[in-house]
Image (cartoon, rainbow, N blue to C red; front, side):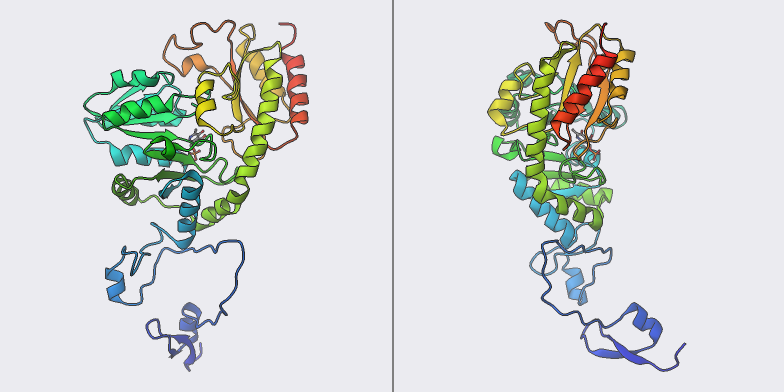
Length: 414
Ligand SMILES: Cc1ncc(COP(=O)(O)O)c(C=O)c1O
């Protein structure tokens, strides 16, 4: 250890050089980084401690004019850049980032509901959202009721004095029904009920919830916004700030923050997102149309195809489709055979979380996921097992060849 101070630290208040021993210099070096570096990539600000120049600043924290930054958990310039970028894409005014899409869903529930309140959720909502609702109903004294996603204006009959929130998902998970969101919003507005949508499928690009009058949009940034199948993050977005205080407060109380490195990864992917989405859309439609001609397939549930429930609302409300859809195979194929078909695919990985470059396939036994008797819907002849397909960025000709080979091998001759 040196016994003589060296003068290479600077005072945190005045910036003047101060004498210091090497151990202090290692902690408080006086660096001289030239200004003027500029690049396209946003800086990654990692930080828990936010440093104030004086106590007046510390005490004024939270005031945008004086000291906006307060604590790394709540916001950093990197998370703020991502918040603003996402809001601009979706037409929102405000964004909160959460550690996953599911945490974003959870935030909406906890910010808006208390014991005694009632919430309406569509049957085809993302499974863990349904489970979240059931937990609130069981343990938190909140009434959660499920509605047919094609209910449209009929939702008015379900709204009670205690109803505080109506969830929508467009299209719904797995079975892909597109709701008449205009009718649901009109009914909710006339009774002062808040509407929230899980808008992950359109990534906020193909469906503009705030222009329609929806109050809150939830995005699983884990999907298209990150685009690399390697980040978990969610967002809650809104336009009218009357709800903002409750959402911000709930997030702060829960202590939900996100890492600056993950924000950086999402920021890095956002500029290419619309171009990626267009490629997913093109390939998925080509494959969906090919599948619609196959004798093994009873129905293709792709919002851009007329046989998908709610296709007319997709045409009215959406400017494109994305890469996720489902097929219903003919009734004659047993579950084991459908499993063999999925496992026989060589270019489709088996996995849940879509939005990346790789194509995916997962079989679902929908009868166990919906109210008894509601699946398959009345009038659907010859409806068997469902397979959800996510079309990545491979050449669709290779994916079609793969689907054809697996169908001929595992679904032929039944
Ligand atoms: C429609 C939808 N919403 C939300 C989520 C949740 O996202 P995360 O995996 O980031 O929790 C998913 C994930 O699969 C999803 O498909």
